[in-house]
Image (cartoon, rainbow, N blue to C red; front, side, top):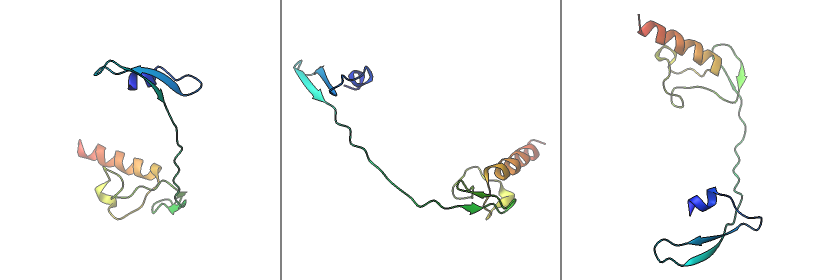
Length: 92
């Protein structure tokens, strides 16, 4: 049935489908129900550059996390810089 859905639906969201098990035909109506969720937006300060961001990098949320920064909260730019430095040092 997923193949039939990939081929697209008619304007009334119905499609004809033949069961491969019993070889009977069915008219399938596809119903779309929107679902929503919400979370409060929280801005964090980067512990290195003090930038405000919604997307904070911290040890429990991001892997891999630079060992030298355990316990810190970082913006993406600072995390990238420190992670890159740590990777360079590990290959020397």
